Length: 393
Image (cartoon, rainbow, N blue to C red; front, side):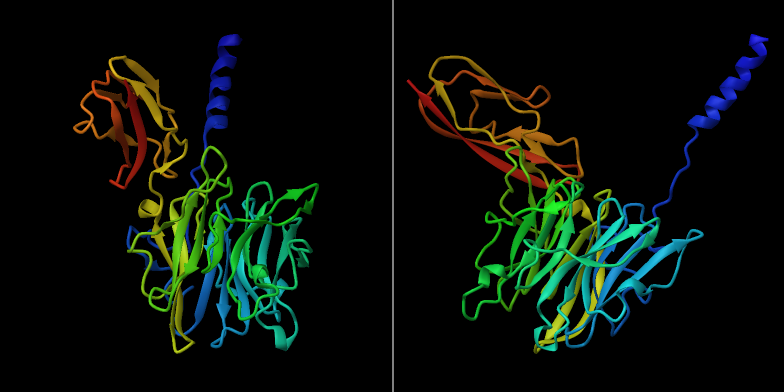
């Protein structure tokens, strides 16, 4: 009897272990490589229509994007979802119809949508607040404004959310009380006991220029934002990473294949960190000529960065040493296996074991030396980090 039962148990176990492969479908588009492509040409990005800012739910079964009028004075949010594994034609999002709304971002769990909405006063078109729309029993509910301290009498926009509900956003609240000041800066507010706390400024990344269009990764590992410096480069996209001290690294300008001579803004990264979506606007004489949504593989977006910084090193002439280098000295969002090396030819008394992450040697001369670590990822993106070595007698 036992022998007869065992085969059935095996069959049931095999059936239980069988997993279905879910195909990730970005509106039926062929995946881009390292050169940005217009996303959904004639479907999402239509000639003569001014699209901006797209976001997908983590299961990639819903999307939302913004549409501007010719003067940028009014915005609509369009929405689409997959029904019977087919995308329906995007249409004006019913819960927000007849409102002036912009820049939709789905929460990382896909159960809510945050966006910017104009104050309903024709004299204050450019003053927007952050609003939130939640799903209730699978259906979209009624929108609610996120109240103070996140909202203010100033312009809050381009909000993005983390897994724990923290909202990162741009605001021109630093201009309050200043004449002829219009620049925006970056801020965040944490959610504690279902209430947003005091707003903190991202002072390490803010500058005298305009910073906005912020996207925060769900785990707060990195952020993307745009900065407008002058009327030659206009708005460009930057990336910053959070290191082991929970500080944001110095911002890095994205690859020249991504940033253009036009306005590159409104970043969004797929949940698997594989694709970057962004908006490219062509503006002439203060008028929008064209605005389309682009997407690109993130191979040239994410590069090695110093996650666990090393302090300067002090050694003594004639004394052997061995130092353990942190395994997570460098990190890369989309590459777990980096190739590390040092400037061995310049410091021939040093040895670096990249497998064991150990630095050893026997200093023969006193003085100050520059140790350079180099990290290279799978497609040859390179980052260098310098450490000062002082050798005393």
